[in-house]
Length: 271
Image 1 (cartoon, rainbow, N blue to C red):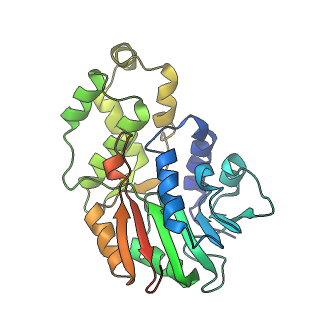
Image 2 (cartoon, rainbow, N blue to C red):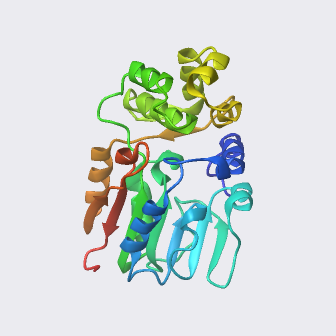
């Protein structure tokens, strides 16, 4: 039986998956992000492994295998199996793939969702990667120093944030940057939001947001889920230690894009 993540956390991810169609950037990749993935895997797209079932990435490459821990999330998000793609339930720590069988591995927010040492995951990813393969993962990175909460409140009330998704992610990254392990229980994100904005009616009046915006943060109520937002330099170090050619690409054009680079690792000799 697949045990990653445990059932209490899986329930939260299922709830999030059902709301995914309403989620905005940076929580979901934009067309520009998808184009970055497409460029990176060009020439290496004959056997693509997708970590998770991010719909925007489901059409990239050929012979795609998507691996997602939770069948309910697959049911909620996966566009459907076809001649050139299929999704299976599995654990990213022990991928259901033979050694050196995949020409490209791609994923969105993998190291935030997994809450696992990135070096350990990368070693498993490299196990299944072909000798000339490439890995591309969009990462959510905590800032080097915690962003002041006052700045978030000010930006929110000044209507500088398009929606609550952006505020939620800024709060989560603030909390991660304040933690030695960069880990954030999502209930703490909700608690911090409620402390900063105790009057939701007033908040709606000042921001112009719809009441439905609260759905995106109230999903965290009672959840055991823990997210991890590693700083960019920590992720760079983890990628560089694997050998090969490690670098990152920077998207732009959406809130927090600067904190959402696509990390790339090419095996030695890959073109």
